Length: 281
Image 1 (spheres, rainbow, N blue to C red):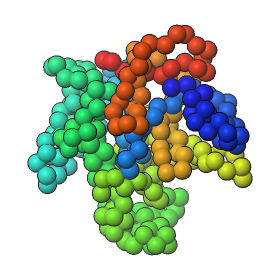
Image 2: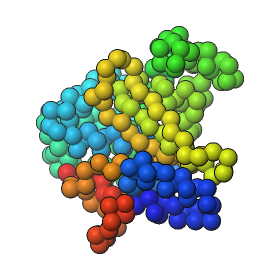
Image 3: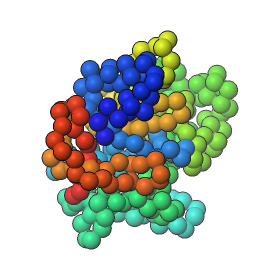
């Protein structure tokens, strides 16, 4: 959607509108609504990353998909439906890594794949997998000071009253429906080898538009994807930059009712008002 619709949601809040204007000044062009069910951060990052991988040139797409397959292939889940959903998710990524499209073999496109909210659907499988990778990173690298600006995960959990890294993962990271907080962002960029740029859009007048940037570890690691997300109090949605390629997109949003709704084609608009559309591959 164009950023004007985000501004309209708080049209009686001047401060919020000014922050949306700030997004436009930073070359953001549009946003995508993400269903708010406690999983919105993980859903936004997962969908946004897959969207970029699918749109990448062949060689980069295959390398990125292969890297994800390597991270995900050894994960397992106790519930049969969840494990079957995970295997289906990995299979889709393997298709990309092998040079095929996401829906080769008669499958659904990326958007339609995320419509199924059942335990064995791609939407839930993607969220569970990201949560598990984040938890593994926090626990296995609990004493690594290189991921959080010189402070390790164990210390951060303790000083914030979150218990041990294991306690934090068992109560906040792994359970579905619990929103991301605290050290999750630092662990996620490491676990997925992806950049994250977070725009903080609170509704108060005390602060202007604030960005937080998180980068995966490793010097010179600049050839990674970066997912752009905006945070309003208690909710995350996707953001899109001016440079996003729109040539192979169709109109749709990850809507608030639980699906990924599609709309009719819109008339041409100015560059700041162009409707962003997810891929049909």
